[in-house]
Image (cartoon, rainbow, N blue to C red):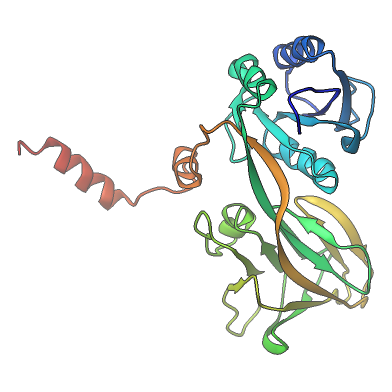
Length: 294
């Protein structure tokens, strides 16, 4: 992408106050002599609707959810996304709203670098792949358990009845997966993780699979039906007894975030947001050592 912008895409949070951030974006787009269109969250109209494929840059105003929506819109066309935190700083934000003017000037000058993000690709029955930047969730939609079978390289890993399964990217391993008791993939790791939700009986540990593993997940919705969710959005509702098998793999460099070289590390962000917290014993020890005379 060259330094000239002809069209800028916007993705906006449906409810947050965005007046100052929107004013900054509008002023900047006018200085660029660029058209401003809206590519996501169209239920809150702030610009004429447009396609991300026709844009040079997509700007997400809101939080991580808004940035995920922008990434899904921009990734098929290979367009970069600038995540702007209009509230608390999240994992996908490059800048806070109060520093947006400076950030946009840097983008216009080409003073940024791409931050590639992998996606989890899920294919079933020859349908178009589903792509999850955080996670794919297979979860019961009503009363009764779903039945899930996981195979690795053609070999049965485990089968169980329960509430469902979360399959996550390294980025998503710090979200629903972590809350469900699954492992966190270290920053820079290339793996996907599958975490059972409330399995009933058996021994069903979370599974960490490498990019080269062939993973298949078969879902039997049972009598209550099931939902297929991608990054928190419902993509399909399966009727009772409608069994489906997904083939999962990690697709590198699926989407691109704009990085200004000042990104908070993943671990630092988790600690700041108190998603990772030291045990009280460690806190007491650190305080004691800080007070030691030498």
